Image 1 (cartoon, rainbow, N blue to C red):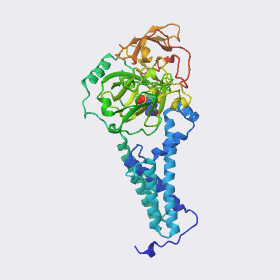
Image 2: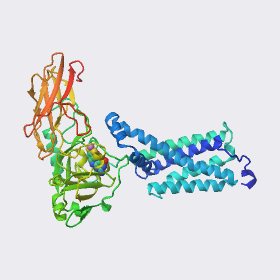
Image 3: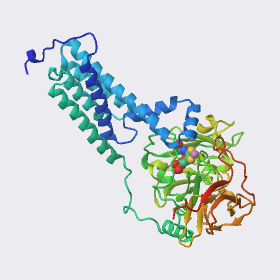
Length: 501
Ligand SMILES: Nc1nc2c(c(=O)[nH]1)N[C@H]1C(S)=C(S)[C@@H](COP(=O)(O)O)O[C@H]1N2
Ligand SMILES: [Mo]
């Protein structure tokens, strides 16, 4: 094409509507292109921006979102981060379009936009290769925006470009979605006989419950998830190591191979998040494969003044609690016989018996023995969730049986104290009857199922409470989860007619 054809006569001092439109198309397509090559990972251009958004959000706002909005709160900061990423790439395209206009040499402006989009994306995602996914669409839509044929609000060329951008975004969303699905490890490696045995034992001990309540082992897909970061760290086993350092006689570092060649055990361990509501569902149990942490600690020879341990992780999470809590703790690399999924801390996480979920550090990288106490991530935000869990009895299902009886059922958990019994009242707490309990699974930190059946007469004020293995009745007083975990008896008005059957 000769220079005369691309000669531009529309040089303007202000950003034109056409430039703005194509900058927005470039921004949206850049974000989509990045998603298409990176999926929902830390290499997606939105991820590092979201990490900053989360980091800069004041703790009081985070606490408000967790207690008032719950999981959907994530959508808000993700939406904001997508907008910011679009603005960033769109801004770069606009810069290119302005340069093309001012320099009367569009190639320069186009190339500038492409290189800048690539450089900035590579810099923030630390992935030069995948940054091309964001840069290429920015370059292409900058080039299309610089072509004279797209001038005019209703030009066919412009409409074709807008349609192509939308199609590109649609296809990219699909491709990125496919990439983001965690690979199912279905038949690759057989599950060890020991784990298989434990999974079978759990199944055989489940109560015969008609209602829809989870079994005694939560499947990997069902197991709840709480992460401070939207985009989980991606740590290959070969790159993993963990160091015990600080106030120790000697630093101890273990690699994944060293860790997994140590004495291996399979344990049932239940986790519960301090942030969950009284009758919430952030309570799950799995069979974990790993090794006790005590021998490693002994090798390091802790000698700090306060006997406190600060655990740190690859997502910059940190939590501090007494070293004593690590005595019976466990370093796990398998969950239900499969390698630890990324969302549960791949390749290695900590399991601390009986303590709130937040002490069970995922993507563990360091244990530092301290001289004085310090706050962890959640404690800095006002929570007190490093100690032992509160006792709870959940009422997770109310079912009308064919016999005309009502069945109440759920799970109960008291950490290492264990559960002695669950009591149910159908008259608002005046009289109490013992519920049926599943046989305890082996282990010091495992939940149980309970079930109770009765003949209903109209509507009932149902109350459920547990007595822990030390004989303590669960306290009746109600408190919210913030700051030290919810307390109180689960209470529900049950109407014969409302119960699902
Ligand atoms: N590194 C890291 N570890 C972490 C967290 C986290 O965000 N990052 N969340 C904690 C919280 S609050 C809970 S309740 C449990 C949840 O573990 P799960 O996601 O495997 O259920 O992990 C804990 N360990
Ligand atoms: Mo948690």
